[in-house]
Length: 423
Image (tube, rainbow, N blue to C red; front, side, top):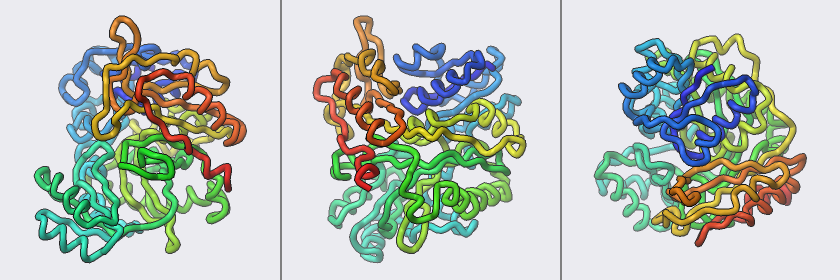
């Protein structure tokens, strides 16, 4: 199969590595890619958010399937343009992608579909923000309504800080102020063809920059899968997945289909397990990063079959995906200053040594080849992914590999999945 993957981060690298691991001889192209992806796919000079350019390339090169990784091409309508030309694409159209592109849209759909979520108020002015903050009280939760690269959410006890955060996004549109929900978070992915859904294995990510969930929100500093603690509350992972499929994923997919905006692609449900039950924090319209890096390495079923079945409307003919019993952990190595002001352009070394650790592979997030070696080009630079038979084994392997990576001023969290072992 000839496959085009749009995107340039560790999520896209993880997707490509999963496709290559099938051993099916796929010919994979990536745009724009990065230095690590270039080792596993053919990089093409293509503007991934230009619907016409992507469609022309896919048509000219007889691409069998286009996989859209990040949110920007979705919101730009790239999937719509491809479908108009009859090219199979994994990723929702522009209208359905509003589940991620607009928090207000997502809240409306959840209410209409009867999906459990927290209360929220839509605010367009500082006065409306202040009223909403006082309505819910501290801790304050403020979210940019539109795309913010994973950095548009602030949770704080400081009312002034919450108001300042809101005002920084009001120039771009509205913000959402939500009630604070407390409990462990879960990321659960669903493959959808607009009617049928197939769930992947749950994962948990770490959004804060520092150990102990301190510091600012980031795009994600690590993740692990599966989640053994779900057994304590729900009797097992399968029971949890069935519950969320029935109460969240199917109602949303069915409602969007009824509205004439079928969701074809990856429905990411960001969940929180509260004392009052599971609630949806947010939806994304694509694979999550860094959760993808720990979910796909455990996937036994061929990823290409799932993606193509979703793109072609035949997902009902595909069995529920199977996963290995192995555990997976990823630790993100980030540039100095991330997330506020990452220092880029510094050399990155020791990657081959890190990848040689048993059970470890690397997913590149922001690397480029400057002719003399690899350099960091963004905040999150590389994800160390480790598999093991136990969490202790996987953690040991992951941090052994992290210690071998040389990047001046780099930072990473040291507590990824530590709580699982303590349990």
